[in-house]
Image (cartoon, rainbow, N blue to C red; front, side, top):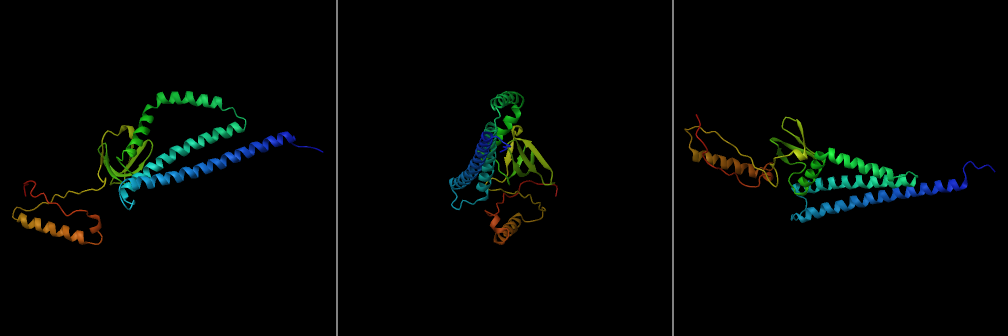
Length: 235
């Protein structure tokens, strides 16, 4: 009887295939467990914030951004380990790979200090609740909507639609204009002949009308605050 593959060889290949399948299955299970744990962590962050409903936009944005960054880092590390284990099962010597990775990591560490700084700064932006996706912020003098917070960069889109990308390590000033609440300052010009008390009364009436409005009322958290006459202009 002709054997195309030696029985011992076939058995060894079968065992290797079974080991690889088992490793992949365990990796998939670990991925599902990690995602579930991160979902629980997100819920815990919402509950810890002190809001009874746990569904506030502010805390939800922070929890979503933080869990997304952690998930990305953990899953990348997990699948790198899985790839090394599978290579070892296939008979590939991984010691030189690990040694080469160590040397490469050392070289990259010296040459990519800015990259490491950007990653660490970005993580602490989220951990310290400085800025989140969906906030309106001014970064290094440029204002816009925060569309992305990545490991390395913050992405803003300004009112003209221009996308600005800032490496996290280069952010020297960051002003969050919509954390918890935001305000808008109106400078209203009034003619000298007008009665300022009457003008203030009209402004209050408009503000109260807006608060009673079905569309704008829920968005206004406090009545209009009037500072009074601020300066005297030419007219």
